[in-house]
Every structure is written in structure tokens, then in C-alpha cells.
Length: 82
Image (cartoon, rainbow, N blue to C red; front, side):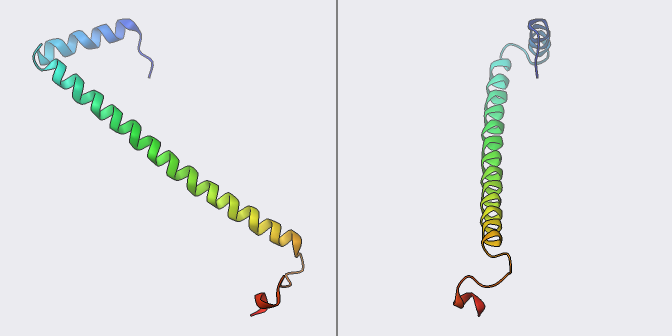
């Protein structure tokens, strides 16, 4: 979200009038904490998603290599026959 300096000024003035000078710093801190929590949650979700995708890619790659090594579907080892 890109805000111009004029938009930030207008939002700040409206907030100052609506909340008053005593509550404004308190509300600003709460908003900043909430934004930080959202960023951390977003990063955590992204990391978990990336890990799952990476694991699926590795499994798919391993499966593809096994199929290429044994296109007939015959077991690679005698114990695989069981």
C-alpha cells in the first residue's frame, strides 16, 4: 500500500481529531504491534508453505529418478518384491 505524504497527513489529522492527543500515541503503538504480528505470521506461513512444497518436490524428484532407473517396474532389490 503506497500512501503519498498528503494522504498520510490527512489520515493523521483525522485520527488526531477523532481520537484526541492523549489516545493517539496509544492507538499508534497498538497498530504497530498488530502490523508486526501480521508480518511475523505471514513469514511463518510462507516458511511452512515453502517447506511443504520443497518436500513434495524432493519426493517427486526421487520418484522420477527411481522410475527412470527402473522403467519396467521391476523391483530394484529382491526385498522390494515382498
